[in-house]
Length: 229
Image 1: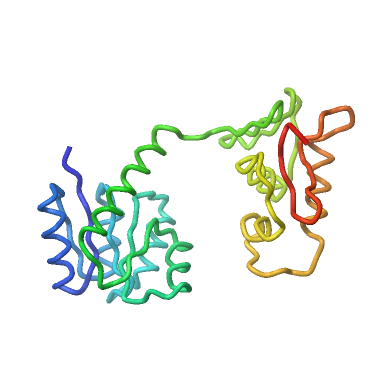
Image 2: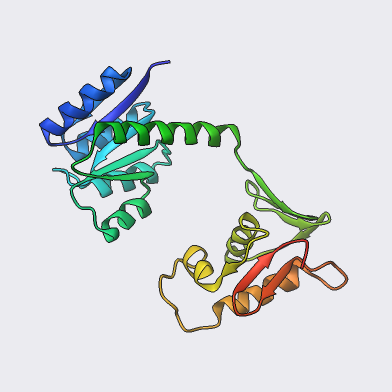
């Protein structure tokens, strides 16, 4: 099946170079030379992937990407940028990009990354996770219902996020830094006991008296959700 790619690039030379290579490899290509036009195509078209320049006239590439993700469109996006600093890469990935390629680049590398993203997307589509379990503990990601041995457990929103992160990483130790970044979106130490308070509340709810403990403290390191201590 022919796959369509959207190339949003204001530099005609780069756009021609990428388009030529994609067409030679069997792709159909739509092009846009500014951010607003690119966003219109991304919101209205059906694409296997979007190749998006970081710096665009009319609307910045990250703004375009943010609008795409706000519209709940999960099309894989590769950002092309002349800026290759770690900070800029992090900005791109946090904005919702799936990959970040620094100019100048080789087309073979772009093609390889594009194909890898499509393989990953196909694999994810085949294995959509709607529930997480650990022993008799079960979390339904669609209804947000949590239960243990059939008994419902009522969680506050932040407790739910915390448990979800622990379930997704069960059997592995998660550090306090990981929890601050992934659950609270803090990229610094707030100097509070917010983690300890939420861990304590969560432990009381999922590990009631008489039940085999699932939430374990690994002293000096962090926490782990596991059937085995």
